[in-house]
Structure formats: C-alpha cells, structure tokens
Length: 189
Image: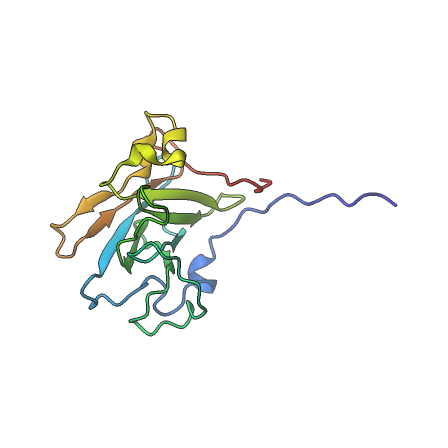
C-alpha cells in the first residue's frame, strides 16, 4: 500500500472578516477598566501598504505574569481578563486591542505580547512577539537570538499622547522593515 503524502498548505483568505470575528473579540478587558491599555498597529505588505483583510491574534499573561487558564474567551463579559483576543484589520490595515499590560511569565525576563498573524497569501500563520520597550531585553534568550540589526522589529513603541496609555506595534510581512517571525520547536513547517 502506498504511503500517504501530505498535501501542501492552501493560501488563506481573504475570508477572515466573514467567518472569524465575534462580538468583543479585540477586547481582552473593558476600556472602562482602570488599568486598560490599547495595543494597536498596522499590518503592512511587502510594498508598505496596509493589508485590509488580515487577522491578528493576541496571547498574553495578566499583569502579574500569570497565564489565564480558564474557559470563556469567546463569551466576554467585559470585565474578566481573558488573555486572548482577535482583531481583524480595517480598510487601512489597522488593528487594535483593549487589554492590560502583560507581566513577565519568568522572573527577570521582559514582558511581551505573543502575536499570531493570518493574511492573504500566507500558507501558514506567522508568529512574533511584541516586547514592551522597558525592562532589560538583553536577558531574553529569544530576543538575543535575533540579529541585533533586526531586534527593533520586536519592540513596541510606548504611547501616552493618544488619549489612552498603550503601545503601537506595526507588523511588516515582507520588505526592508520585515518583522522578525518565529518558529517554535516541534513546529514542522
């Protein structure tokens, strides 16, 4: 009997705006929460244009560094921090999350947002990190494994002048400012 051969991945999208968003998907916490912040940015293609049909997923610990491990992320009540969210990009490629500042999951290491990107033309999702700009980034083994000239693509920009505290993290899928994307052990892609 011949051995089965896996089929190649298929190009995804652009169907994200029809099938995957749900009410409150980009609100990991209510904007009225006293510690709420905004993480936002633009997903850019190789030519620097915004990608209007991308989907960004956010995974993060709470401010104490604890990873939320309870069901209910799809049924948001507005006040319970979920640790996970999803934001479809708008016509200009912009995404936005209302969340809390993540804490470090490992003592002495910098805090970060874990981000997954889905977009047209990608055979598989992309993984990256958005490190907070404060803290000692040089103690993080993932950050220091990246070529020093590209590390800035993994660091958020702090914002306070937009009316709400938060961070900006632009994602470049290709080109001279391409964001560093990660591959995890055991990931056969």
